[in-house]
Length: 443
Ligand SMILES: [Zn+2]
Image 1 (cartoon, rainbow, N blue to C red):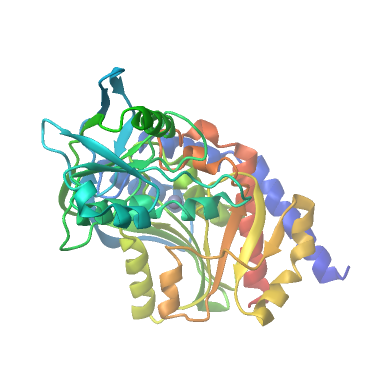
Image 2: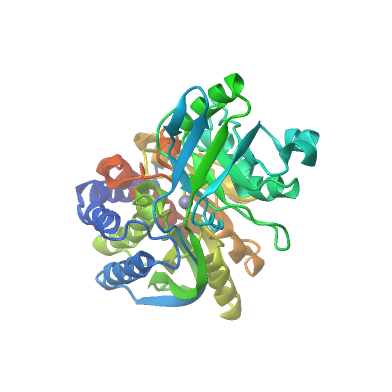
């Protein structure tokens, strides 16, 4: 191994050592989880999260820390939702539900109707208005358990949540139930955004826990005429001024060329947003903290960004991208982590073959930590829009172990105690090391 390679090996080891010996990041995550629980964009908790991360970045003595104004939608859940299966033979059975983000509410007495259970939009179409009019549509297609990639399983089921209510409403449905996108059978109703069609009808929509879904489906087989009642009191309020938070180490040689590492600061209101995505934000901050602790002066500008509003409308991403364009910044690489903060397995570097081959040479540096460099899966909803002004930007990301992630995702189960300090910090170090190498050798 040449001297340069030996230096890199030493530096990567130092980064992991620094991350594992550091306590600040984990304590910051604990603070964020305990004090800003429910920080979906537009809420008071989101504003506290902005102030907190701004303060943490300011305390690192970076070259600059600032906020970018972002106008966001403001949806509030209101009082806890209630739902009952009303069965002739079994009586009233309570089931856990959670309103979908941006959903309209039921009226104050709730909504009661028969259920039509379907697995897909095709099935909905076959049933048609005649069978659906005046009823509650229940989308009950489970996440596929057969494959390795739980994100692919999520991708294969999520349209029930994002478009299901709008599709059901086209056939005259008056309410919508969606099976929780959980990989397990449990009592946590998950949530997430739904998108109505602008001029289409808007019907109240909730997710029902996986156990609740199984029970309802079984009862429907015995008693197809059973009734279902649910009540929500969510509200769509006027837009609110919020912020992205940005911290920067200025490049010594190429200050106008930027490597950005970012995650979204907003999180679903039912949980603490520990894995999705408080942990990712804290890792992005930790990258800069590691650089500072090791006295690294980067050649290019390195920025950590807490993006606001990924979960609802990605307004923070749009603002960051348009600011970058307005300021004529060239972005070399955009690193996004939004898959939780379990043990890192891979670093994704999505780019053309020539540049990927260059990055792949760094593979041996990560092998001691059980991490491989892979080509697919870099970037994400927050950094990808930057490519409109930096089309060459390399999309990077952290791929942790994701077998457990969908037990927590968008539910009350996504809490600080689910995050392991060493696992999260291994991700911080891996991210810092990839960004260090990118900065040192260019792309
Ligand atoms: Zn997320």
